[in-house]
Amino acid sequence: MVNIEVSIDYPEYDVEDITNNQILDMLEKVGEKLLKLEKSFEQGKVIQEGIKTAIIGKPNAGKSSLLNAILKEERAIVTQYEGTTRDTIEEFVTINGIPLKLIDTAGIRQAKDEVEKIGIAKAKQIAKEADLIISIFDSTKELTLEDEEILELIKNKKSIILLNKMDLETVLQENDNRLQKTSNHIIKISALKDIGIEQLYNEITNLFHLNEINLDNEVIITNVRHKNLITKAIEKVKKAKQTVENKMPLDIIAIFIKDILEDLGNITGEIVNENIINEIFSKFCLGK
Image 1 (spheres, helix red, strand yellow):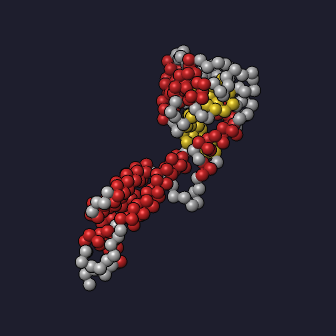
Image 2: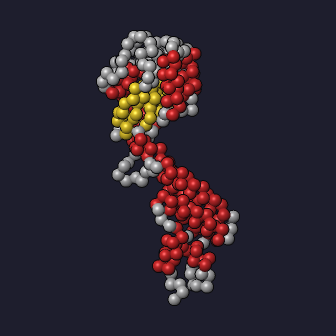
């Protein structure tokens, strides 16, 4: 930007003109760095807030048993009676150094009373807002209309399907077309016998690229305002490249480059115009 401003504002001085190729090269490098920062936001959000994880399923599918297996303690009441969980149970657990906010929800079915109806509505709302949905199905039974409603609920969401009770005789398999159409992540487990829980951890790690997070060397965006400003800057980079490729005058190109700097200045707190002027007079012998 400094070189462009000098070329525009001080044409009478013997300053080497900056070429379009140099500008394109700079924009390419800046664009790559900004895209990397933008992509880091999901990981940054995970680091700062944890992964909001909803455990959903029909009554007696094994949601509370799964919560207990993950926490390695009897946190939730488990009985043979359906509808034991009426409200949500929230607990934090750490996987590969990243916190998961686990939310065990009421079993989704046709409600038997007003209290259960409220619990089910709450479960559906939590599923909509969750970063990850773990939907658990009783693999000793065929899918029902209620199960299909759950599958509809997790469609287009980051989800893992668990086929529970694999220690018993099962009828529901991973190759079921309705399951495969909903999620690519299907695991057979036994929450009661603690089978498949490690595989679940690995699946979560891969889904959120937790093993790629390097807190020592990487710059990671954790603030949504910063992420939005970076996204705006990326759009300006694209527009600036178009103006260069269309051989527009330098002063038009300069508008977009200055906009990029201003978006980034809103993150760093730097005042763009003032910095450019200071840099011009420190780098070039002008007016002397």
